[in-house]
Image 1: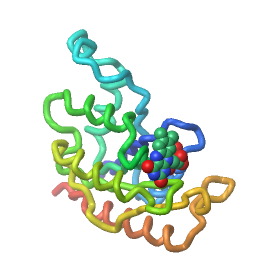
Image 2: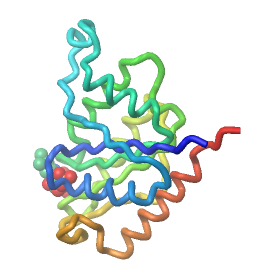
Image 3: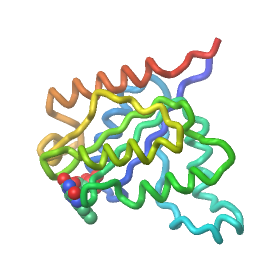
Image 4: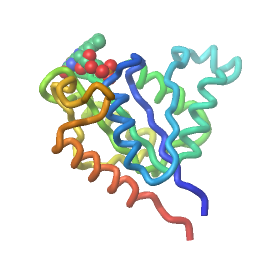
Length: 180
Ligand SMILES: Cc1cc2nc3c(=O)[nH]c(=O)nc-3n(C[C@H](O)[C@H](O)[C@H](O)COP(=O)(O)O)c2cc1C
């Protein structure tokens, strides 16, 4: 039996990203392999695409295409997803077919503000419609005042969020279709 794979996309590039830490915490609960996509891609430019897909973009596409499930950690920048994530999604839409089509997809967000990223998540859900991703509708993992919920090793320490991640990843896993 082949191992199932989870691909993670994090909309923050900074080394100490709390969204990335949240994503890694979720990935630890996945029974299978985890691969993190690198979203340091060139800005989308059709001229660049016409000259041939950049290697970094093709690599990301292949990782998403090969995965059984997707987890997206989405920061909130001025109440919306960061350009880094939008850029990656735009590149992924430029291949034949949709690499996320029908794939169970979990959304997480961690923010400095108290809302935990309700608005960024709502917008991201709409952004994922053209990608045909099977986005989990619940639980909504919204970690507000995020800096207070991680320890020095970057692990989530708050019970309610730990339970939420457990439930999210169990639901994600359950929605991966088992080949006959
Ligand atoms: C450009 C920018 C815009 C931001 N806008 C918001 C916001 O709308 N709401 C919020 O709660 N935090 C906002 N923040 C703070 C982020 O939530 C905080 O920096 C968070 O840690 C970023 O995610 P990361 O730790 O994964 O990099 C903003 C940060 C930046 C850099």
